[in-house]
Length: 486
Ligand code: UDP
Image 1: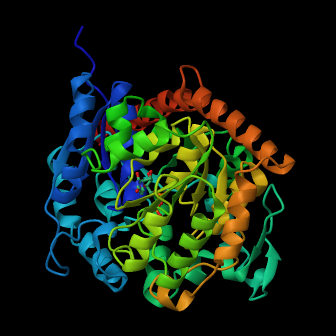
Image 2: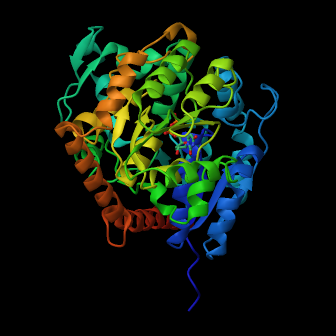
Image 3: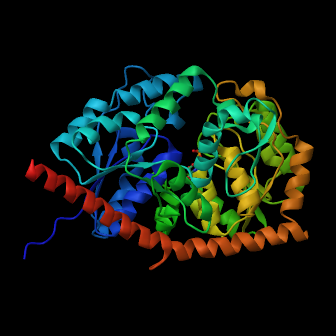
């Protein structure tokens, strides 16, 4: 009997670390379960994932990159990922450049039509060729069912919510209080931005289902809520970061090379007592006004708590005199990483007892997977919704107390949102032994175990991958039959 051809899945991520990293994990997961995964990347992004893919191939998994050029006419060189844009005012040109990739993408799809496409929810121009060729297309939202549900409810109840300062998000399984200052659109304002998200939402109506980096115990009622409202299934197949179990996979994740400071970081952690270190990182895109950066320095510096603080490359102030003085003053107790830290590796180290995070979805799921509690400080987009999930629904984190975010293109105007004194107070409390904190710690550990169970053999996410692959096969098969009969 002829051997059955493996299921061919084409992945197209949004070139932004918070979206591309989990989609690479996703492609690896499908390949490890017998599918042929092909990921479309541009050259710079490919260079960040070559070694990861090579390791997966060395396990005989069918996975490969398909590199297409990045349309560079609208942007300075090397701006192939949101984190490499020198300036946020270039975001619009970046999204225009992305849409210029459509002909290349169409060409890839036409030359070898896959059985299914998994593409980022925000890449709306992928739909036409998939629809034309009847290829089932699944959207990867890069975020979870809870924030998607909050967003849906707000969209549906716009008139009822109006412009009041505080409201309960209508119709959700939990009582979710929000203020208008915490809405995603408040930090991502402007007609162009609205158009971009509206287009993505519209086009997503033609997707088959969603593939979500989450697991049922993290947001149990929300996959159902989403399905009830949208009529689409949200396949929870995560946390996908847990597919990185080898040290090299954890340490090189997202960059393809070992970050220069990795040795120092792990040596630092090895010398600290279990659960004593606060890891502080605000994702791949954060920007703070210099004044806020200094307040964080003050809070961490005076807290007496051991910490690792990651400051994005090029963040104002990272090379200034105050930073040098700061580093000297905390030498031995605190470590500043300028650039990229091996986050998943750090979170899995015994010495880490908490994570001060901006609540990007990737960070949330990685922290939950590691069983580490979060001190939450959302900055923009849907991060305030994620904070509510973490602190109120799952109760595996505590809020630092940020009541407003930073507007995408006007960060300097944001000033100081959380003062150094408050940061110090919250850090000491969060890393201490008060009952409320101990309970959060316990729950974080428990949820971490559940996350590992979910991706383990026969766990809910493990089973969902199998079922989803069958779903893809059946849809693709039905398309072939229709073609034969036409
Ligand atoms: N990340 C990392 N090292 C860093 C900064 C970020 O490994 O120094 C990774 C992090 O583990 C996560 C992704 O980059 O996988 C960031 O995604 P997230 O959704 O948390 O936030 P975003 O960057 O999209 O705001």
